[in-house]
Image 1 (tube, rainbow, N blue to C red):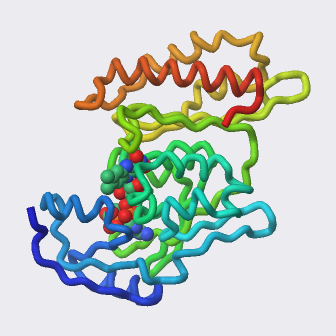
Image 2 (tube, rainbow, N blue to C red):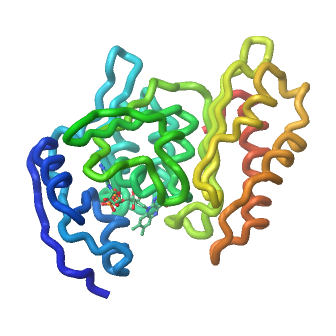
Length: 288
Ligand SMILES: Cc1cc2nc3c(=O)[nH]c(=O)nc-3n(C[C@H](O)[C@H](O)[C@H](O)COP(=O)(O)OP(=O)(O)OC[C@H]3O[C@@H](n4cnc5c(N)ncnc54)[C@H](O)[C@@H]3O)c2cc1C
């Protein structure tokens, strides 16, 4: 199907884009168009105008601030994230995640800002950004604010973004802890049937000093598994019944059920992934 008629605008600065999005009723931000154009062709969205933010230099930066804070502009695409030396060195978990997204074509057009604003429950970045405790920065005509990614994502395809706001950048503290990022999909370039992102640090005595675990493809949207984290922290692998801890948590989660996999099948896959990844992280330390 063809999309309904719309106007196309190409602002050159962020200020101009914000002015347009707040003054034109029924308009929508266009990033790489990887999700939005399909939605428009299906007539799920019929915006009166598209504000293309792809020509705004202020949204394309990757910076390391004070040697510990990485700032990534909303329009940085997935390929740049997997290839950028600042991201690779300071956030290897994020570049490893970008590598798993779709295929080369999608990675060259899809953006980190677009993926976050789309809030697809099976999107690959979201569990990783939760495990990394990322913040998103939003700007409108009247205010600038920042929110933790966990607050920003309200549920499947639902975020805290307000009319007139643009997501400008993602801020993440440097994190070079041991990590594991995995996605199980039916075919290589597909969305995840189940996905896990976890990062951990062991003390010299083998006790888990730090752990964060998040999953994707649940029917509530991506989520951190805080029960698992609190059961593991401060213990050695020998003191843990990991299988039981995982089952207790998984049994309470409602996974997506669709043609790619029913809820029970996804739970089964997720349990296996969590067992293997967490066991490796809390015993051997490093897994990539
Ligand atoms: C064939 C295919 C396979 C894919 N496979 C995967 C996969 O395996 N894993 C995965 O994680 N993703 C996958 N994706 C999604 C892809 O990675 C894109 O990130 C995602 O579709 C968003 O696309 P985009 O950046 O082009 O944003 P757009 O499609 O342009 O925008 C998406 C939505 O976000 C809004 N928006 C975008 N940027 C901003 C902003 N800065 N501020 C405010 N609102 C904004 C738009 O208005 C729109 O509502 C796939 C997509 C396709 C087409």
